[in-house]
Length: 157
Image (tube, rainbow, N blue to C red; front, side):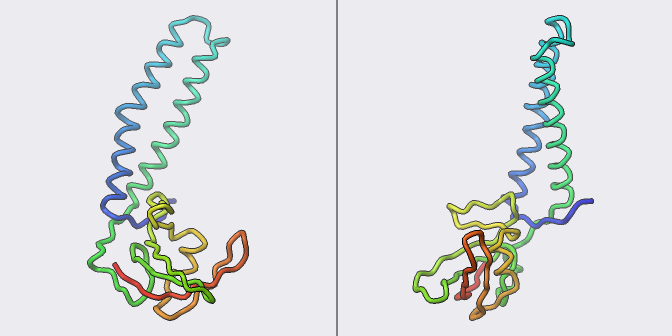
């Protein structure tokens, strides 16, 4: 059973490109490796053949999973986002309670997350803690290092 995931146009395009590459480049490459290994003789003791078959199984599983993700993906138009509350694809500026430093995060689908560029997954502890919050509200976020409290300072697209 697939779950709907929300992506930016760019994020969905990257997933589609990855799926296309796996089908058109990786799959034929592995098939070629299997054929070469098969030509070397006895398959029962052919490590190259067994490794290529295992790679093929892993690739086919990844293709099936990615096809499911792409089929259930929905693109969110940032121009139609409500900025009254924190939702996916919103940029939220937060301040740690008791501190002065502010930090901005954009909430994205898990496959689009990139902490270095400030994109965090909505399924991460911080993302889950911020979802649905309004400006001025405090989110208590439980992380492996303890509980952190962030005040929502601003929400934008």
